[in-house]
Length: 146
Image 1 (cartoon, helix red, strand yellow):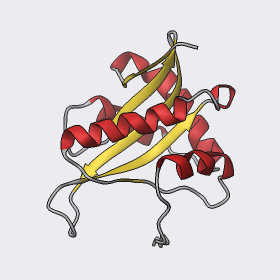
Image 2 (spheres, rainbow, N blue to C red; image 1 turned 135 degrees about the vertical axis):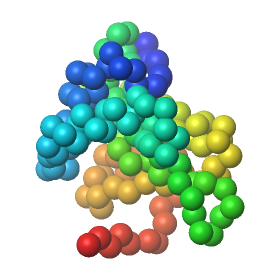
Image 3 (tube, rainbow, N blue to C red; image 1 turned 180 degrees about the vertical axis):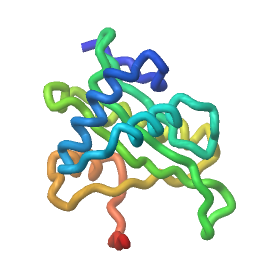
């Protein structure tokens, strides 16, 4: 496996949508076509307020994705980084692609001067949590949502 980590490009639309749809399926979620269109446009746009997207590519085939966003935080002067979506094709798991995607976000945060990268996952996502426990510290925060 020859893994390359690179930003999402406009020519990646079909493969990005394949991976993101599989990610949504994993969480038993779906979004309308308008959300796919808007999300992809934001990923490849130049607005620093929007999410950034990175792909893990094996040869010429994307096998994983990560989306992240910088935002202000009332407890810090610097922005922090929220890693919202991380997905690796099940056939590619265990190859280091997930770790490489997280490390790409860490590098982007370092370049931007963001001292913190954080994300959420479901408690039962045991496979992913094995990786997360190696690359980050679990906090005691609990998410509430309206």
